[in-house]
Image (cartoon, rainbow, N blue to C red; front, side, top):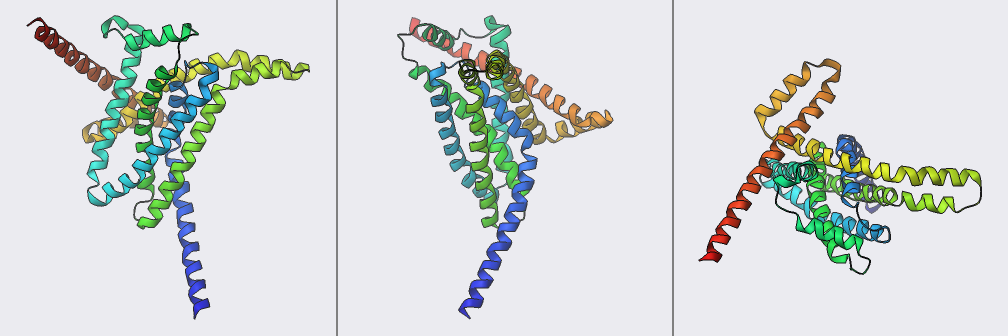
Length: 309
């Protein structure tokens, strides 16, 4: 009897693992697009750091990402069990944040006079130029920003994965989310670490003997700045695509309008949907930046008036 019970238990475990494996594959496919955005965005977030501090910053953000997952996985399971609509609401708040961040980056780049003077950015530039200044304090702010952005992207990945495991038992859902959470964190930040050290690899190969190694090293060294510039642009675009996608899916009439317009483009439907999501993210992001800027100016005026009295 004991042997039969053990075999039954092992059979049950095997069935659960098979189900978890299948649902994990489905979740991985559904989150592939977000993972691409996540990679570009996180690689962009750690740019501008001195070469000898790049891996330390990536590791610090990766640890923050693991903490995000430790918060998000049980929270998503709890919220979906108690009040599922709240998951969508929280995601939309995250979408607004991403759209706002992207719009702010673009405005700071092309029309810096429209926004308040960024003293923090100027201080960071001065610190980068001065070898005697410790950059750890500046890195901490950059890491915090990267972890905040990771939280939003991770939340979307977790929710998509949870949707792929809908109808499964709590144990199966927990296993699927845990596997996805660990895999994406290790995968994304492993790739980010590799990307930011491409120039160092190129320099190392150029110092080696042999024409082939030196040519590869020269190619990597020349390609590294272009790749980082591309990732910086891709990361900003990803903010609009992901943020806009979250907002479009959360607003029914907007979702239907985007689907109807995209359907008219036939074979380009998927591309059109993505572009429209990005456009929505851009427009809403700019509106949020305007609102935040106006509120900030009103507060500053009130403070100035209080100081004068």
